[in-house]
Amino acid sequence: MRQSLIQWVGIAWTILYAALVVWLYAAAPQSIAEVRTQARVAAGTYEVDRARFDAGRELFLREQYAAARAEWERADPARRDARTQFYVAYSFYRQGWGRVYSDDALFKQGLEAVDLAIDLSSASPLTVEDAELKMHTAAELKAELERGLERTADDFNPLKVFRERK
Amino acid sequence: MRHLLLPTIFLTVALLGGVRVAADTRALLFVPPPLVTLILAAMLVALFARGGALKVGRWLSADLGAAENVSHALTLGALFFASAQAFNSVLPDAGLPRLVLASFFLWTLWQNQFARFDARRLLRSLAALFGTAFVVKHLLLASLGDPEGGWLRRLAAAALEGVALGGPAYAASTGYVSFFALALYVLGLFLLPPAPERDVDESRAVGLARDLKQLPARERALVVEELSRKTEEGGAD
Image 1 (cartoon, chains in turn brown, green):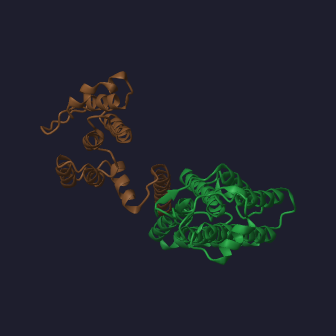
Image 2 (cartoon, one colour):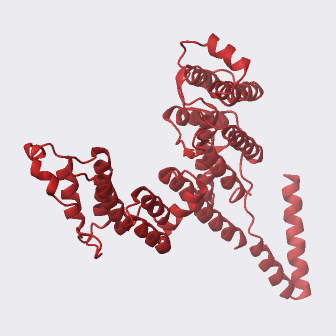
Image 3 (cartoon, chains in turn cyan, blue):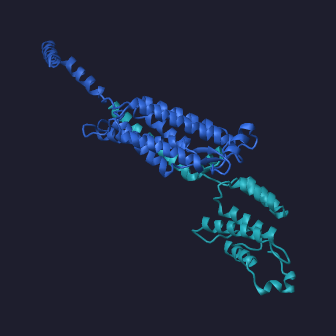
């Protein structure tokens, strides 16, 4: 009886440990802190740090976009929260937007972030209710970023300088 | 021991064998076993079996219970992956040194598959190869990648000019992790018995002894006498 118990405990332990090793190689965390984050994601207990998210939003509203993104990076280190990624994309949009031309590099990063936000909220269309924003859906933001990256004859329209940032 | 300790040791080696620490960012990198190390591990385990260091027929047998067989299969699987990762931890990641050392390992293991088996010689050549590979990867190549390296680095760089050394630069801690993984692997091999001892179900013996005590004295004496006679017969055989 005791031997049989040891055998089954050994089997369970070996399978569990092997699964942990395989998971570590698949998730490839880059630091011990990331191991903890990934473990929380795997266990389904991962949550965005609300205080840091709000601090990032405050910076975003004060147009300190890089600092805002740094706060959101700490609030959502695993990049699993669609809403946070939407704000990250929005910050790239606002920072890259210009009356004469847009910054393609920032818009591309914004597009990547909004695509991630859309992927993370695949169950339902992502809508963010925030009175400070002029675009509330990820689809709208994505379309705006894509428009900014396109090269068209309209780019040479001098009246373009009167358009407004969203 | 073989149900808990050995799988733990071998899986830890499998985990640590592929761990590297990037020199610039200090980020952890997990390098899965490349194909060549899986082949080397298969050849090494085959050699263990050939040399009698591992009696596979005794580890996995129809005489054993299902749980025991499953447990042993997991232990042998862990040994295989630990061997693959032990090779992975000492083989350089790219370039000429990797090609040369992988070829040496392959040649040594391949030769021993067919030559007259000499366990001592095999162990000696494997230890020398592991040691050389460790020194090449974690001392020589690491010092070449170190921008603050001294005259030895400049000398080696000049000597090996034009040779593809390859592989990213790793922090010094990678060498320590590799050394620990190898030490653990050797410990695991040392603890690995060629064949598992049979698990004796002591609870059954305890139950029989209890039943025996409940018998009347005369019947108990008869049983003891019978058992003694059987034991003597067994001894005479």
